[in-house]
Amino acid sequence: MADNAQIKVCIGLSGGVDSSVAALLLKQQAYDVFALFMQNWHDASTTLHGDCEWEEDRFVAEMVARKIGIPFYFVDLSKEYRRRVVDYMFDEYEKGRTPNPDVLCNREIKFDAFLKCAKNLGADYVATGHYCRKETFETEDGQKIYRLLAGTDSNKDQSYFLCQLSQDQLSQAMFPIGDIVKPEVRRLAHEADLPSADKKDSQGICFVGKVDLPTFLQQKLKPCEGDVVEVYDAYYADNEQYAFVRDTLASILKDGGADVKLITDYISEDKAVPVISGGCPFDEDKLSSLSDGQLFRLSQPVDYDIRFETETYRSGRKHIKKTRYKENPYGKIVGRHDGAQFYTIGQRKGLNIGGHKDSVFVIGTDIPRNIIYVGEGHTHKGLSRSCLRIDPSEIHWIRPDLAMTPGEVRRYRVRIRYRQPLQDATVIMRSNGLYILFDSPQRGITPGQFAAWYDGDEMIGSGVI
Image 1 (tube, one colour):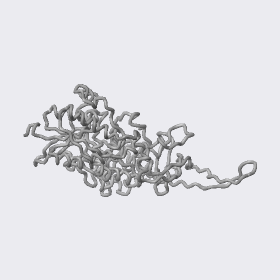
Image 2 (cartoon, rainbow, N blue to C red; image 1 turned 30 degrees about the horizontal axis):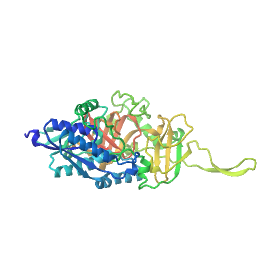
Image 3 (tube, rainbow, N blue to C red; image 1 turned 90 degrees about the vertical axis):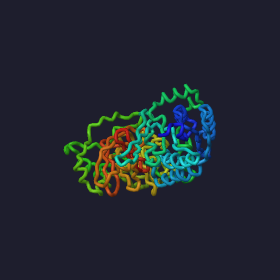
Image 4 (cartoon, rainbow, N blue to C red; image 1 turned 30 degrees about the vertical axis):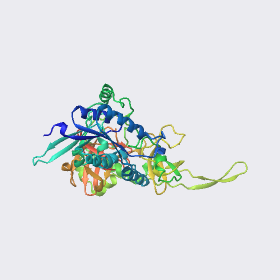
């Protein structure tokens, strides 16, 4: 086996402290390491700061490389980034789905376009400052299998962002800080007097920066005013889909007499209820007996179809004739918006709706009719769902050797967004998709986002909801 000096490693140096310390560790471990900074965005008008953040990042990255004593290169991948990440974002939002650009950036740019550039410069591996780990083992027939593991620092674990990587991409990846906690990364940066030691962590869209999302999306998606409809609790009492979900979940409980839980205790990543596994509440045999059609329907959200009728009335001393909406027990028009495509499930900022005791959240969007539906409070029925489906074309196995076959049922832990605590769930593979049934209802299951499933610390696969 070659010693480290014979292994050429390209570090994706962003100017942040994480990639800086990753570069430092590679140098200390005597790898033949060089830095490559990639520019992925030009348009400063879309960022909240209104300046070219990448120019400052490049300046810091170059100083870090000089301090460590490694060669520094620059590559402009902005055309690839726009085509493979930003255009995808616009397309997804236009369909009323909410994509994750950071996941796409890793799959399409860092470990594809960027990787190819690094290989052209002679690199054997590409290293990044992600908080995750990689392990390798060989099967009995000599095949190498690469495992993607959560980072040691549970507060910074970034394995979710790498949930679409393939075995080939993992084979060429290195994560030098995956087994280090963030405070230790800062300490190492200060100890080495790196220029990035006190640099704040980046925020916003990967390589674009912190943006006002509606303004960013309006580059291609035109604003179009529509109604904001608040949905009342009475709607669910008379909704066939909600009743189907309730009755179906109740029918597969281990304790047939227990009430099925339909509303999550979860509020946010910062106020998460500690996950205490009480075991799967569902009977696996009863679950397996559900047809593909029943599982498909179980995974579907409630559709909102609240129609408002108008009436005329006389107002004031002069009895001026006016028109108003009749009261509706299912909901009320409570505001206007600039385009349903600019909103996502679970969103509460930017709605500008007053007169409520609790926060108001988006619970649904109707793109063809340009309506957004909202509900008041964290416990609103429209915020919670128990089951989601991933289309067969969107299922990705990081471990193809562990891919499920139709009819197979497994227990995994799942997250549907970054920083969400892992949730216990049953994963069911069928010919019409992969279904994830959570032990407890989940808040804000959002079409277009990625669900990632884990066995212990190891990420096994992922897919687009």
